Image (cartoon, rainbow, N blue to C red):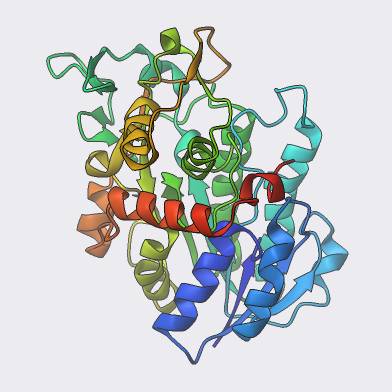
Length: 355
C-alpha cells in the first residue's frame, strides 16, 4: 500500500513517516515538500535512508502534483502553522491562505482524480477565541487552570475544548484557513465518495522539532534555555502562566493506520487528538523544568497582549477514546526529555531552524 505525506520533511511529516514504517514495514511512503522551512533540508537524507521517495514540490502549485504516483491515502501534514501568520508583519496573509487552503483544494482534487483517501492534520486553533478567552481561570503552581465553579460555554469544560465547542470567528487567519479546509475536505469526500478524516491536534512536540516560537515552542524554549539565550514571557502580565497541551506525533500512528483501513462512513470523522489536561504545561512550568536540568536562566517579561492570545488551550480528547479507543501514550516528561537530548546533540539547532 502506498501513501503520500505532504510536508514530509517537516518535524511532523518526517516523524509520521518513520513511525509508520516501523509499525508497518510493507508500507510504501512517498512525500512532497517545498523545503522552504529552515532546517527541513536536514531530513531529506534521513527519509531517503528509510526508503521514502521525496518529491521536491509545492502543494500550492497543482502542476507539482501531476508527477506524483497514485496513492491510497494522503496524510496532509503541510501547513503554515503559526497562529500569528499573516498578522505579525513578517509573513504574508495571502501566502498563508494559498498554502493552507489553496494547497488543500489541490490535494482534494488529486484525491478526486485518483480515488485516494484524505487525512487532514488540523489544529486546536479552529476553536472560537472569544469563549475560551472569557472563561474564568486561576493560577495554580505557575499555570492557569479553569475555575471549576463557573458556567462553561457549550463544549468547554475542565477537561478542555471538545468537538462540540464553537468554531465561529474569530479563530485567527490560520485557524480560519484550517476550518475552511476541514469543511471542503468533508464536502469533497461526500460528493466524490472517498474517505476523509479530520484529526484536530493539540501542540505537537518531540525530538527533532525545529525550534521556533510560533511553531515548536517546547523545542524552542528548551534549546534557548540550554544555550542561555534571551527569552521573555509575553502577555497575561508577563508571568508565563498560559497553558497548552502537548502530544508526540508518533502517538497518532495507531489511529492513522486504522483510518486508512476503515471507510469514514462508519465513525465520527472529526476528533480531537491531544495530550489532554494530564499532558499540559505552562511556559513558567517549562522554565522551572529547565532550571532543574541546567540551572537558573532569567526570563524577561512583556505584559502586553498579542493578537489571539488565550490563557488556557487544552483539547478534550475523550471523544477519540470513545470512538477509536485512542489515548496518548507518550507522557509530556518523556517528550521534554527527548527534546533536551536532541538539543544537547545539536548545539546549532536554533541557528539551523532560524527563519
